[in-house]
Amino acid sequence: MKSLFVVTVTPAKCCRLHFDVRDSLQDLVVVKCNYLREIVFILQSQSNSFHVSQAERRKADLLKQAHSLTEEPPVVLLLHTLSDNEGDWSILPLLPYISYSFGKNSSWIVFLEEETNVKMTKLAQVLAKFDKNKEWFLGKPLHDEESTIIHHYAFAENPSVFKYPDFAAAWALSIPLVVRDEPLKSDFTIDLKHEVALYIWDNGNGPHLTAVPELCTEPEDSSQPLNHCATTLSSKPPLCGEPVNTEDIFVAVKTCRKFHSERVPVIKKTWEKDALFLEYYSDHADPSIPTINIGVPNTERGHCGKTFAILQRFLSSSVPNTKWLIVVDDDTLISIPRLQVLLSCYNPSEPVCLGERYGYGLSQGGYSYITGGGGMVFSREAVVRLLDSGCKCYSNDAPDDMVLGMCLNALGLPVTHSPLFHQARPEDYARDFLAHQVPISFHKHWNIDPVAVFNKWLKDDLVAKASDGLDKSAKTEL
Image (tube, one colour):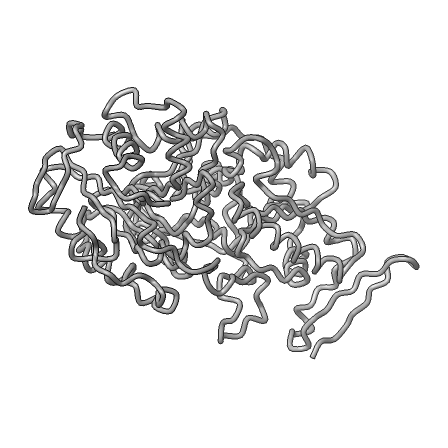
């Protein structure tokens, strides 16, 4: 049962706010009719067609809610449409534009992801508790249990003291904080939520993240009471159709002779059996695995020559003609069934480049790239365009993922990000961040039992129902 409050602002216009009768009256904040117009919502959208449709649905929901509350709705923007710069996803270079466009007539900038459900009335109540004339950085706080390479070992003595926002819960900046002009301090964008918090903190000169309990990441159909939550998450990863068949996926594993006996056995004990088409590419042909000598000498770093040789082989008659190519390292742990479910959302006839997105020099017109360790996913069309462009390595040991990023940027092809791919180990990520994920991959075997990590985090139990229709035949050795 709902109770209806009507606050008359002018004889012609009214603001209709609906409150759940179970809410405590002392917690209710009467929000003026024009308050929603002071909020700018920015959806952290992407230009891939699937993500555009997801963001458009979220935008429509926000505007529908707003229309039921007021005749003058808030601004709702899609991040990927704000300029032609592919690096706009890093947000920080866009702050001057946001300040110029909304600094005079708005009070709050609220960022949210495609899967973030918003209860607009509740969120307006929450924001009204804070003085909009002061600098506020609001969100659901995450923290590192131990210092980690993905955060450049920040706050090594006590990493838990520094809090950064879980983007899935939504996060907000007050306008006085947005208009502050500070230069960006890092060439690399690796974990945006941590880097946003570092930028705002400004070596102690700016505000810390303020925890807002109403910004939640509980699933919307949770059995737990969610009356206090202004945000929740869509309950399940989107299933856009039948999971992609294993016949449509080709897996390329990059390895080298010195890791044949150390890393390859881990793959064979864990996820190899789920891949129908898989080849190991090495600097040495070992028929017992088997590995294929792809004709590129092993390098200590970079592996660009090897990766481009894999791309060329993928388009040749030497391997089955499949819709998707997955390139992984020999110390990547990955769930192929979960990947099959995810790929059901993407159109292989489009140039799709999917994985964990990093960025280099984005504030100076740089480029985005898929970090290799978490797994790089390419549609056949993407590989065709990459190779037809004439893009190539400047040396065999150039960083393959970054060279590919430069090529994609030159071609105007977007990198599509999924937070389900991970360049590092589970312990390198905040527990609360992983708690609302069904991860697809992790990377590195440092100081862990990789088989145990796979069994805990990536074994197929969590997608058993979605995988019922998957092809269960044994892997074909090529």
